[in-house]
Length: 334
Image (cartoon, rainbow, N blue to C red):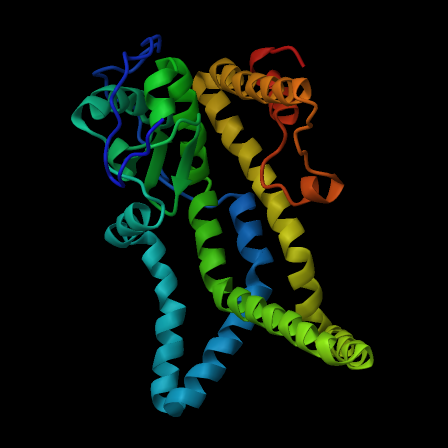
């Protein structure tokens, strides 16, 4: 399929069936007290990233004070600390969605299909539909995303190829991420830990380069340098274990929080009446994966699957786990 230029809309195929039960078409419904919030999953994500944020704060402060002195350096640190508020600034968020994530606003045809479904989902949840911005990603994958504080994005495949009831279930799942605070908490934590991540990536690159250079001259020098680096890491753990250990555990804890967040978003979709429809989407994804495995097996190849460590670091539960959880809401087979 030829690639499309950024921002361009693909041709819209014949619309998928509109089989959604519109319970609230034209009717005014209750408005939830909280249009967005922070559940235990979001709070957990933020708590896990506190050590990384403290390391980042120390790095930013060190660089700022050395380059600009105490007065201006303090202003730089305060500005960096306040920059996280941009996560909730709609114009900045929309610019991020367009420029970084390559999302776009829906066309008139796409809006005519998407908005009635979105209004039904938000009506069931008691959410004002304008609280969140609908956007589209040009992609032939069945997918959607909750971005930062206000954006709900769907792929063109999801928008045009699946029935309205299944699309509503997907949107209800993403709404669950927003009302639970998963999206903004994840982005906020990532932003405040970014300086530390960059410093760690630079350190690893320099260490690998140093080992490569010494390897050309002397095996003994390489071993000595490697021993020195290991000793430095050990000392860091020994002296600042309260920072080092949480940093090591953070990827596993964040992945666990991500998996819990997916199950919580599934739960919201189910509570809004979309358990069976969301299960159908998951069955579809499971079938696609099985088909891919069979095709590769016919060619004598094997689909690369994550091992135990990869599963611990995965931010999404497997389809079986999600379907089992949904079965509690709709009497689905487990």
